[in-house]
Image 1 (cartoon, rainbow, N blue to C red):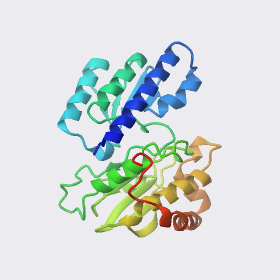
Image 2 (tube, rainbow, N blue to C red):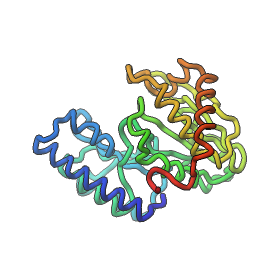
Image 3 (cartoon, rainbow, N blue to C red):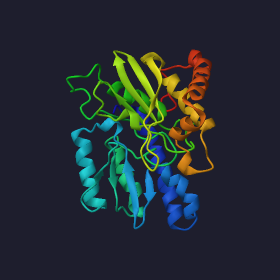
Image 4 (cartoon, one colour):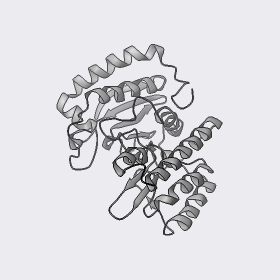
Length: 282
């Protein structure tokens, strides 16, 4: 993951705000109901016995300094271990609420954070664990995953989606990324060209994703993703969280209807969409 000066400033300010929110929760100025949306935006879940902090590891890439920092955080503020998740994140399952701001600051020192690892937002972007080294790879998918990370992080329109939203990218014909089990799966079919799969998911209603676009040029990737998530944001159900994922949206409305709405939205925004400018890096 490539962190710019503006990235670091953004994370530092976000951590400062959350430190103040934690202090207000501890002194009773915020109720748990008021605190909940704030902590979820910063990767903090409340489980049965303790809080859980989920750290984003975009497309599963860590450098040695980041790995050492995660180990140090586990030793200092948790029980000496962490949980590596199926979506390439790291979870700390026993932090004290008073320690979480210090944990976030320690993460920021090595370019890591917990933003959008919980809540109804676009979650951590995942990829092939062998990305960049796989013999069958058409093209390294990590630059595209990084582009999606920058576009999706703190996107002002997509902070309160009907439900969580997961994106996966693979550059290989052999799918080690399980793209058909994601809200959006991107499978490279030729250099600079992606098959776009939508509506996959596991959970209590498992569904296999369907092909929304057979060959999307990489130059159209961000405006097309914006059109897909924007369509879901308007069409997705908010009356029942078990029917709020995009897999249910596609199932109830039909793939052709969803495709028509996405294509219409894409045609509207693509001409004005500056791929070099994202909500985070403007």
